[in-house]
View 1 (cartoon, rainbow, N blue to C red):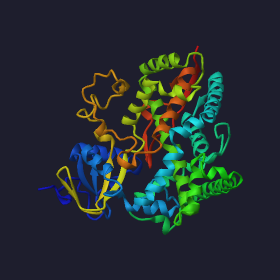
View 2 (cartoon, helix red, strand yellow):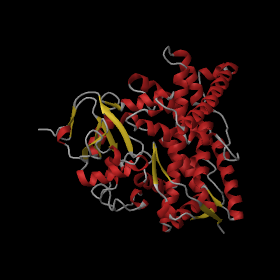
View 3 (cartoon, one colour):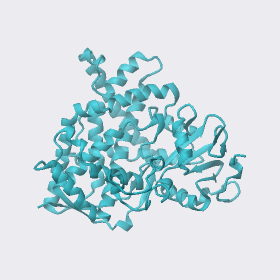
View 4 (cartoon, rainbow, N blue to C red):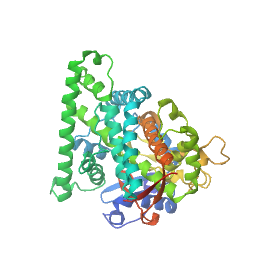
Length: 464
């Protein structure tokens, strides 16, 4: 007999409210992880009126990912909140709608486009180098997280939209100031049992509205400019050069694909392209400054690969840097930017001896399995060598590792994210030594749609 939802273990909580008052939203991913040690890889929790299955079982997670979008969809409340804020794109689309969005996003971010735009990406790397060189010469502390955000926005807008923003060299308020208010508020609304913003507008709601308005004004102008570019160059309709052009062409051809869908996809690519990669870069710095023995090994590989160059000069050269790549994979294992995913089944389903009814709210927690010794040798340790071909680690279960999701909805930005990580870290450690100014123990994980690090400062020193 399968185990039913009502028979799952879990915290009792208090009448009606369940465990709602015990949860700390920015730290909820850690709380769910701690409960997995107590109740197991499949348990239930009640948060106000919401009952939810919390799943850390790798085989169940893989089944959910593999059976999307026909068998499982993102939790309907998430889609409702996102659509309510005008975000209707590849991230929250389902069925045939998703397939069309996915084709365009994947094409706009593919290796062909990365190669074609590599020279422009190199300009962003050079700008970042100049900024960091100035900081190293003066000895000033820097907010490297903000620099990563600016870099990833510049790359995303250049590659996907054909616009060069150059936020790296801007001073004062930039688009990131607006963007950093959007994801945390959406996350808060998704996880709130009551949609308070519909009843009363608080200060953070007004700031969110202002940020979203500013982003929408910018996107509206991009759409106008993109359409003009297509009018001036009709040949682009047969061979669009970026995601924006491709999606505008599709909007002309598809009856149910209007400006709302165009803008929703632009927001999705912009926010996802900025937040996820920048956070992975930040966590890699946290781990490399905590485990300093790996900096020398990384610099040795970079010195050998780059020779006298200060950063990667050719796209083909990015295929190397295997130890750097291993550091990226290990960072994403220990500090996944998306440790929580929300789903519900479209039909009654039995998986690995558990029965889930249609519409059951399911929270997938990805990190628990990835840090268990049964899946990865010394699972809680930072050990990049485990990803090298010559690794002797006996336990290495890729089934328990899903930094880019899996199944048909595997992240289309995976290759771009890894390319950005290589470009930035190769330039950084080729030219500078790095030390953390903020004590590691004071740096916290903050869950705000993606898992980010609390603010920290670093100091760069020119390598002799």
